[in-house]
Length: 467
Image (cartoon, rainbow, N blue to C red):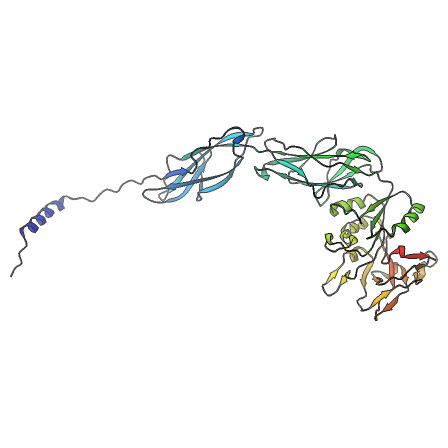
């Protein structure tokens, strides 16, 4: 039995059959270009309200028939640079001598068919130059009174970026401005005639490496009040306000001997000052006990180099602000450089119990420049009792006096010398607790010419008397 369709379904079928032969496939639509947007449509700023030259911009794109593969940006709508980011920070340049300008900025999206937006998004960016700021360091400032070498530190900032700086200029009193690179923030000055009062030039050393500059700075006054001035200049020619240092005096050098007091108390002064006054009255005195130099390197080393001779006396005091070092340890690099250059030094000192710690591997830098090779590692203690003798070595018995202990010295520091031939004095040691070790308490080092340039005592001379 054949199934019968209703007449209405047969009619619909015939109608569709008649229409199908006349249908064609649709033609593909052409690729549509993308659209680009900058998040800020306009920046309506002028005068002092303009942006500084470092500006962050954001943009986006959309494509109705594909996707965005990247963007091209331009400052002239001619030269384009491809990026994939949707934001970036720009440092726009200003022309030399101009402190404001308008920057034209275009960006266009690129779709997956490499078709760019034919109507790039545009933004006018009004910018201004921000003058730099220069300031002297107020933490490590120049002391009120300085010797024939002193240093100054400053900082420079520029909102437009450090790369926009052109130079830093420093001036001493009414002298001419002295120009250095914008990366320099530290200079050391040494007067050319430190023994002569009055206005004069100073040698200039750049950085902590003490690079001597070809040109001197003028206007320094020795023995009189001074001020330093600093300012910075950027690539547009804009200058910072001038910052001024506190007043300081450069002391007149009295002679070629520097006495360095690095002792924890004033006790030795009562012994050394009368002796110095009697035999070498024209000396300069540096009190490190109460006045640490703001900068050890290179200032302290350059200070030492202005003198032919240095007398240093110190004790075993360790300073927390110096990392628990003795002053002689902190100044060790400067002392070594001074001796290497032919300077002459007389040192009398003692050491703390932690001066040499074999367990931790610590070895004091004093061993580097001194005639000491090592200390005894045995237990117990070396003592120099009252009236014990400190004897010159036999070869010098007719030239040097025998010294005598005026008191009881516990924890003495006799040492093994690097070269026993250079020994000067041996002490009568009283060992306790099983101590064994050397008896040398004074030795010397020689310069390249074979002459003695260092006399070193590991016992405090003010505790000894002549015989």
